[in-house]
Image (cartoon, rainbow, N blue to C red; front, side, top):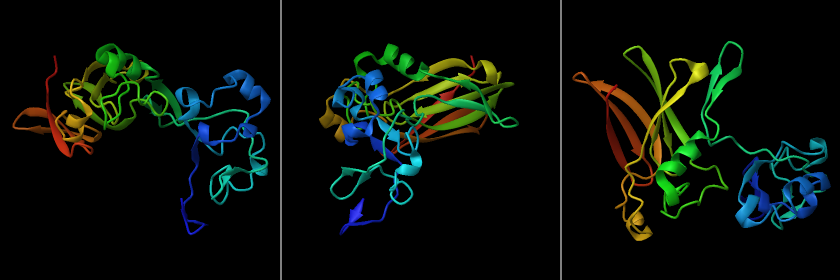
Length: 238
């Protein structure tokens, strides 16, 4: 973040563990518990720095660095006190009504419930390690990209999960009542991390997704940034 002491980067997020204990109101501490900043609790959770402040105007560093702590000594800035914590939504997908600006559907916790049921101990693994439960405190499965396709009068959303991997398929023909169809993940969770590093664990880190048709057949193309590979799925409407 700094080059010879000069800030050259604006960042509007921070991990809960990097805030000073004095930067939370007593009411917030009472709600979350005295040890909520521990690494195995909310410590690694990234929160939005300019939301939830008791008095945003009193946090003098926000307009310049976006941070409630001063660098390079990382000391708390007077007035940057949080009464609520807000985290980026990165565990679901949302369908919006563009005419009203209101959400009509959100998948909520479905991604994590589904991956938890199907992957067991590999739940919320990251894209560079097969250790399970690694991302639960930091953006979870992290849906990264979505592709919309209409097939035989039905509209589907294909959502790729950057961290744990795989593709979520939803029928969104009725946007207000979207339905989960399938989750597929060819990643090999049985191998050790040496195999993961050697790109022997299958596709890792889905980054983008495209639906195409060729010679009357339908395909889903998924690029994987960590493994540097392209996954090609055949799409069939049952």
